[in-house]
Image 1: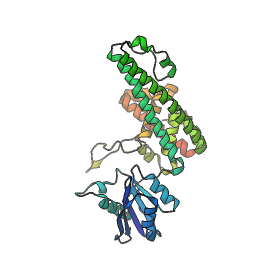
Image 2: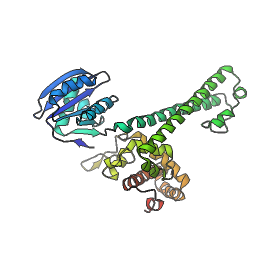
Image 3: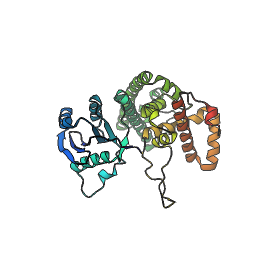
Image 4: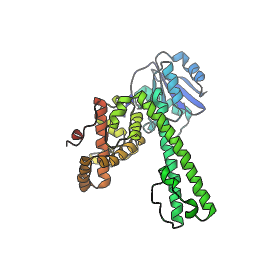
Length: 349
């Protein structure tokens, strides 16, 4: 967890919503100099903070509409801090909660040096990252339609499909009319197939665009990530755009924690209280490294032997989790050192 503790003349807490925002500006002594509700428009925000621009810092909780405010502050050289929503407990606790109180709490946390920071992803690569995340949604939708076709066949106790329906060539070989006698069932399956074909086209378009962008933004890093067995184009793109800048992690530990590859730990009076809050971190990186662990053992005999030893000692799920963390550690170091994958170094221990 990182706290923002830089001194300023004025501290602005913004409780942001889609169409409105509540602004609270505190001076160095903690006295409110502005505390009012505004429309969520750049000109209204700039007019409200104009008398306090000299020495002002703006803090906002991480929610879906923060992009425009961060870009506005960057364009006008105003320091902007994005608050980590899961760590700003002072906002969500308390007997009363409203926009006015929340903005005051944000400004107070910012002034007191206890404002937990989230990463302000830069504007240049943000849209490409969001497009890549949208690809994951489209793939999930396609999987649901494929699953519905398979479940429909199971409902009528029909033979399972011999080939994976993920591939278009296999879907072309389906004999819908012969397999499903009822016209209504056929129409439902044909509707699924039509949507799957349409989604395939859009997924391919998205992947093509993101691959081109990666070769412009970070071509060398993309190539180094691809050098790791099991990390293909999509996993490399996911890691590249979710991390963006490996230098923001001072050590490998925070990186593994951010990628959800190591559990948390709560202790009190020397007693362990388990590892709650396991979902704090980046879910997309967790997925990417978990997939890479499963794929690496297909391409690396040494990795397969390592996994077998761990499985014998800890069981298959834990062994795969350990391998995912090992891949994450490897990715961190090769990225920081600008090196390519070296299997001997990865499995040296």
